[in-house]
Image (cartoon, rainbow, N blue to C red; front, side):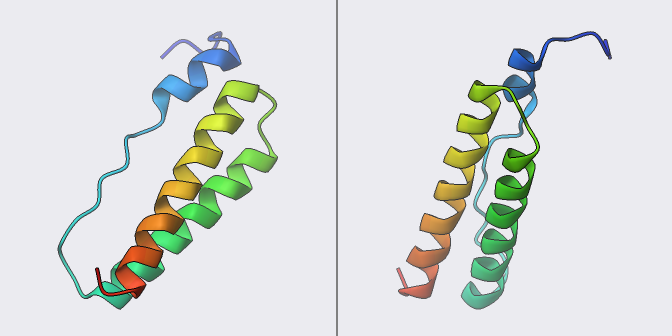
Length: 73
């Protein structure tokens, strides 16, 4: 992997969100909230605006899915 990639390419290296039906809802919701928190922590240390936007979007998706699971949907 080329260490000289500019930060705008970092957003392309973020794995897509995949929601699994394995495990109970509470455990999955907790895991999603943990992933959202991780995205937000990473966002606070990234300077590239597109990467920050991607991480924020991912955090929001994780939180929305956790809320959906909490609601029993």
